Amino acid sequence: IEGSGNTVAGNRIGLDSANHATGWQSLYGIELAGNSNLVGGSQPADRNYLSNNIRGVGGTGSNNRVSGNFIGSAGRFQDPNSFAGVLFADGATGNIIGTDSDGQGDTQEANVISSNSYAGIYLEFANNTVIRGNIIGLNPQGNAVLGNANSGIVVADSPGTKIGGPGQVDGNIVSGNGVNGIALTGSSSKNIAIINNTVGLLSDGTTKAGNGANGIEIGNYAASSLHWNYARHPWVGGP
Image 1 (cartoon, rainbow, N blue to C red):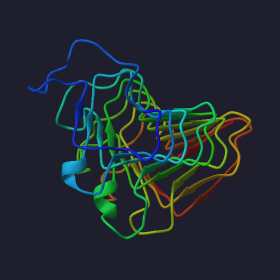
Image 2 (spheres, rainbow, N blue to C red):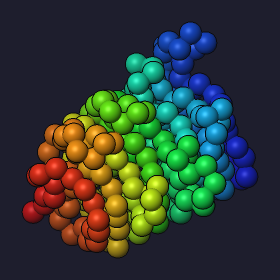
Image 3 (cartoon, one colour):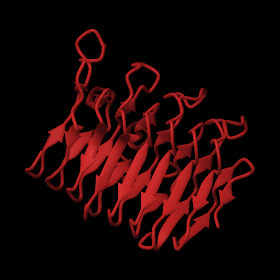
């Protein structure tokens, strides 16, 4: 999508009518090169199913919103995206992954981003991204593990990223992933806020569903603030 102001809703991308893999992979299921587009929405009928692509959705555009989608297997289809479920890169700015937290259909705006063959969400040289209210590494009910093979969220040289927030629906559940729940890396990953997330637990907040390494990994030179996160031990690591 190179234009602006478009909505993409209610599609199966990377799957045929019988919910089987199409046999070929696109670089993106939905590529966002333009600005201010909406992928998904706040109603179940708006949901896109994005499987069997290299990258489920993302690109270099700005001020886009990805909300309410099943990205990867997500408990229904068994053909994950072969790299990342969501990827924004190369100057993409101000994108929202998950709820806009405006009080209208916020809980339905959660993406389920699970079983992808590398990361659930991958940011590289993307600025001021908001990741809010998603389920990353579990099934849609949040009661069983469908981990992404590497980390749930990777923030690489992407300043100003906000993961979670102070609102009741803002926190992400990031559990059951193969390496880290949330990984921050790169000298440009400054001013990262990680707020009110559940890491390494099922949605009940008590049952363990640990990530393979650390819940939150803060790499060399990355700078972040952590507030009100709930995690099983070990939950924070770094050099």
